[in-house]
Length: 281
Image (cartoon, rainbow, N blue to C red):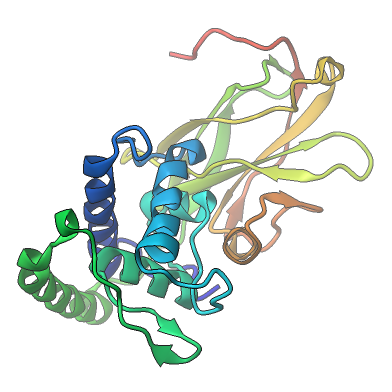
């Protein structure tokens, strides 16, 4: 993946997010049932309609071939990263696809620029081309200012898991909470305490301004045999291997812990209990 640890809150990425939202709004206005409104949070299921609108845009509206190797429809995992993880920068193909979707730009086919076919009449958005061009210019100028005037990046530190406690019994979907300094996102990884067990990466958890973080994870599956089993929980900050796997392979299961992370906790071992628990206040 390209520049996974680039300076966060890049103005160009912020502008791209808003462009994607604007295009999706036109699909929502046409078909509320198929393309409903949703929250741009860390719940991967929320992004299924947005991903479907990408496929509608390129394969139906523009009529592009699904074998086009220059087009890369982002997965729901990638969309979660794009909208919730300020340290994430998409790879070239995904970035070009997202820009084409957001700004109605042509995307290359077999190395040549392919014209976009006519849009539906209700999708004529030519009125915002000029302000969007101004926004891109402002974003480029802002990026230059950030790169040349921003203070040196402070390395994250003090990553801890405060809940659940070591040895505690938890339900299948407990909340995991902790603290970290100078980080935007925390990744929680869960692994059964058995020989050869896989590591399961959970959705990214945003860090609050006061350094606290809290998010819901999965401890095992629905199989009743998981009850009573021990699981390890670890938290990570800026794991490049996770970024690469989600972007290039669209997978979130690993054979080992992401040991290339910038920061990591020791294992908190919990015991899987019944399905539900009372919410933590």
